[in-house]
Image (spheres, rainbow, N blue to C red):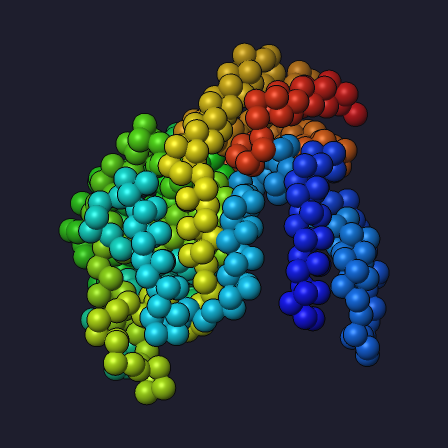
Length: 473
């Protein structure tokens, strides 16, 4: 493809994306393609001869788009917000156009220094103390694995440099709440600590970790000869966006020498609003934090902000220094290959830079406050409607609901009813919701935060919810 051909096709693709965003509200939110339907439309063998990009684009519209669930739809209320603002789309295009490899300062000086700047901008926006430094990781799952590896090495006095975990006299233990994300359990397993060494701590009526139970388990493990390795706190749990209390967790982590990691993947973005920062009082005492700009902020996927209080320790654990990567500038610059697991790094800072500049703190703050207000509005409607319940505190932008109609007696019947009405809304294409089980009860989560979602779309969902349960089969 020549630059002239690319220019003409690029205009066409930009027009397609702009038209898509203007008309996305007219589409079904969730794809209704059956399993295997997309694959069946694709040839089983690769093309022998070159094909025109016009043909590729035609097949994209015919085959790919019907199999896409539209996360940027104004009535997308499932999982978590995962927007890609158009300024971030352009930033991604710039990164792809440059094709820069940003593993080291010397491989692309702008890649390193722009990332340092935008991560510090974001730190200031979130109200984090200036003792933290950050790097962009792919996802919170990967960042949590990095945190667990650092926790493991600190607890074992760098056992990786000797006999590894097999040389450690005391078994390591990690403490999580029963509301922690599944990626935490996965990270602990991949770090070699083992799932048997995870202590799952009960939560209270607000779904926050019970500090008294955590303290008791720590004391019990120390008496048994185990070594507390890490405590994982969550600011905005996946099911209910509950908040663990950082102040007492920090005190326990310091007392027992455990690494304190904070998973604030989605809800951490709310800290752009100063009125939300009380939720992470004590954050200055934690060891590491994950926040996902690719969720509520809107940078598009694979842009997790990972902040650490001691970057020297992080780089000591993650560093690799083969001769072919060493340069004369290494002692003067940051090499982000030593801040995570991969050596290769895309120029991800570009899309965050474009977004922060195009939106500004004021624009992002306005959108977050809009979503917080819309969640409170929906919560009030649900709480005042007979037969409906708000089943968890509404701390951020997620409203957890349950409908309990007259005539249903058993928990199994009520659970099936709530799954049924959510499924019917999804199948109709009007909106997209997800459900989960909390304390043995099936609930439905309404996650508000798609960039185009306004109060009118939340009101439309509420009308659909009431109409759907009224037509109970």
